Amino acid sequence: MSRFLKFTLVAGITISATATAVWPGEYGLGREALPEEIAAWDVKIMPDGRGLPEGSGDVWTGDEVFAEHCAACHGDFAEGIGNWPKLAGGQGTLDHKDPLKTVGSYWPHLSTVWDYVNRSMPFGNAQSLTPDDVYAITAYILYSNNLVDDDFVLSHENFAEFEMPNADGFIVDDRAVTEYAIWHGEPCMENCKDSVEITMRAAVLDVTPDEEGTETEAAAPAEPEPVEAAAVEIAPEPASAPDPELVAAGEKVFRKCKACHQVGEGAKNRVGPQLNDVMGRAAGAVDGFKYSSALEGMAADGLVWDQENLAAFLANPRGFMKETRMAFAGLRSDEDIAAITAYLSTFGE
Image (tube, rainbow, N blue to C red; front, top):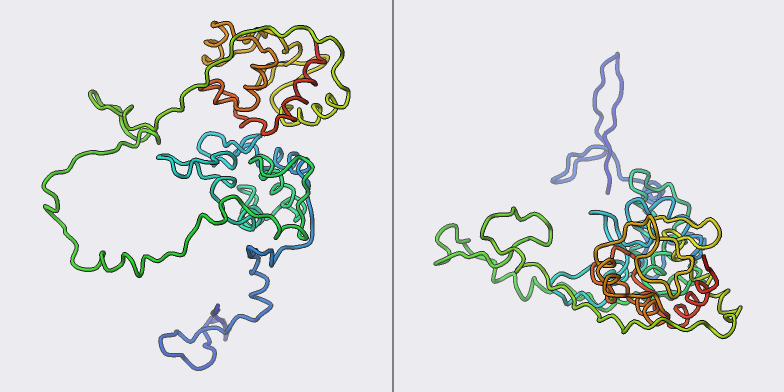
């Protein structure tokens, strides 16, 4: 229990006054905290949703709130900027040599996301968000991890129904039974091994100094093999206009792209190039935009953004183009890819 000092001013001199009888091992100062005082500090959220305030937030509201309060550090797509944490991606990497631990790949409880955002974010202005803001941000983080659709609404009513992918990935810590006995005894302080050799370098963290003759590249995690680009075939002109319903669906999907790309009249290059006339266009052909060396290399090999290549790139940007600068993780459904390609096909020069 919390115990506080009490002071009394007597004839201009401050003296301490003790509370009740001194307990063994205690200083005997102050008093027990009242239940209402404890409750004021008790803002924890439990995995089953206990402690949540009433409220709700949808993905697209979360997109806007995230862009205003979170994207400066965590990126527009929760991909992280610089050394700030990545909140999305990393699925299927926990058994890798260098796993990417994000909300989607590692965190076992959604309550941890809500509690941490509510308690500690945004950085430098903690606890300034409303409950609805926190619900919306949490929904957007789930969406950025491809765990919910874009029409998802998170609230105190459906919160406990959502199960994180790694919910079963944590086990009870049994080291007190299985390992502590191994650690007991006098520690070895010198000549503990016959020889010492370097088996790993922290090159992946950029903290290993460059030294002539060191082979830091051997310690870095293996890069995934690039996906072979499909044979270049310029798609024929469509015989008729695309399905209006598919185009409308593609306009909604394109919301994921608007932070970096523009289309339509007056479209300009932003973080990414403008996408007018992208269908059937040679890669790397937008004037005034500085492309990555990865894209320039594939463009030199004749890459054209036909239906097949664009669909493959949108599904898995880094798989299709190794070392692409595009941070977006990719679209997870064939329906979304078909919709956005139909939508982009309506924008010419």
